[in-house]
Amino acid sequence: MPSWIKACATTDIELDEMIRFDHGAQTFVIVRSEEDTFHAMDGICSHEKVHLCDGLVMEGRVECPKHSATFDYRTGEAKSAPACINLKTFAVKVEDGAVYIEI
Image (tube, rainbow, N blue to C red; front, side):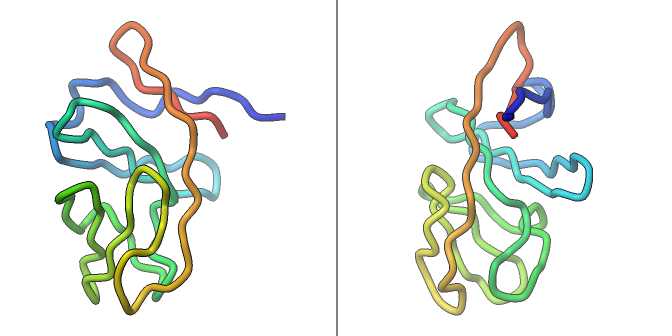
């Protein structure tokens, strides 16, 4: 059964940036868009299993730091090679200055 897990405070992430969040054996990235909305998806690149948190956020995408594959952070869709496998996204809610993801 899914549950809401507190990932971070809203102030932990600047606009158009992301942070890493680990829960159990799972790694996520929490993205704060330039429109000030929050998004969550798998935090490991589907191409070569690199942590995405060391990459960039730009134009609605997260770029992997190793081979520059990009993923739409709203949908998890792999948008550029070499990645061709989409990432899972997770529902997000913001309450009292905290960001929660549904796992």
